Image (cartoon, rainbow over all chains, first blue to last red; front, side, top):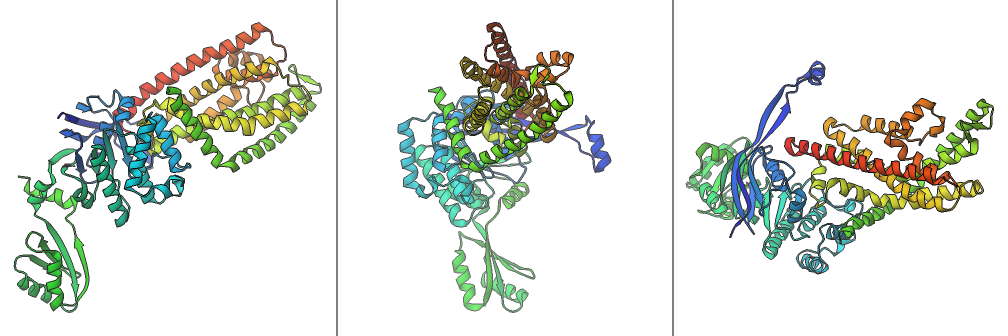
Length: 333
Length: 267
């Protein structure tokens, strides 16, 4: 099987004007030729197969969007080579557009004033989708989500969740080989997030569409991605399957508790009760780092509840930032 | 088959425009107010001139011309500079660039729906009123056909100019000033606000060598000329066609060169 996306040693540099401060600086800037070069993406290579869902992670400003823009053909790499289904995206942008679908979580490609069904019809004609394919796609959508109430609603009246859902459907409509999802679950509530994850996963299975997903939500990654690529400051830190990363980090979660009485003293006695986990306390929270391979969080909680009065609790996932921090500190085996 | 994807955009544009019905009424009322101002302004000009005919045009000639020019303006003006500028500022242009269509073509056809609605909601009513009120001052004959041909070319020239100015926004990243400047220059030099006959001789000659007069002056002179000499007609349409080609080529090339700026240096 040949790769649908092939990226070889891609680097992207931007020239940015060195801005000065204050009114005087701003006036000087008008005539300034003082540019500095910023390397947004630094020597990245990867190869992605048809049908994969790849999580593309990194903190804000890591170069994720720049990479995606290069893959879609909106940006041209400074050096290196990108092939999307055998095409060079930035020289064949219009042709490449036919093969890809894009969702930017913050913006909509739908026609603001029109009901969703009109946007779909328009996309059908623009992408020259055949009647048969269009009908079967709508049929598939109906079986996956309850779209009837959305179809006749103008996009501007939709909630953010409905709009994101519609945008995802629109991106898959012309049955593209690759769909780029740039933070699709940003700002959504838990049930909408779950709905969107199920939809993406179903469409990926049904149509064997390659999905490139950028997100800050580890929940998205857990639910969808078999493979993760992590970049930071333009450099690729990690490219492997998610199991590997999990194995590396264990499956740690932090259980935070607030308990009646003296927190410090309670923390010490909890540590005695749970010798296998590390327990720490500050003024507000007692934190228990639970390794879920050894015990379920719910069991730990049950054990503690029998001997302490728990006022409040939080459960924290290990975040992308922590993952990256750990990779920096310890490296990936 | 290919035309279908463009006409789909026209259709969506019409539906979109009809969602905002109130907008069309506001335009009609605005027109009316503008025409009242124009009426009194030119009445004063003719009164102070002391003669009935100024620069070969009577008061009613001038008024008919300006009323139709205003109607034509509402119909042809597409605010493409705004659209491009805003798309660049907000970054929405990335999504537009990812449509399987050239951006210039995509934008034009996205607008085409509003040509259709504006034609029926503003131009046609104004034209009918003017024709009725002036009792046959507007000749209804073959000139209408040539007028339509001329307007189509005027739209293309106007769009190309808009597109060129919009492309400049890629470099300046601001829209307001550039758009106002373009508006003033085009409206003045095209004969949309003052008939070209009123310009001083030398200036008028210069203006006639520019593309702008092909936008308003050319179609209106064709419409208002009941019995045109074939030679003059061919000349007017020929010059329009020439500008059509030239401006289209310039705007395409300029965009192509400028687009590299986006693709090389980001939006």
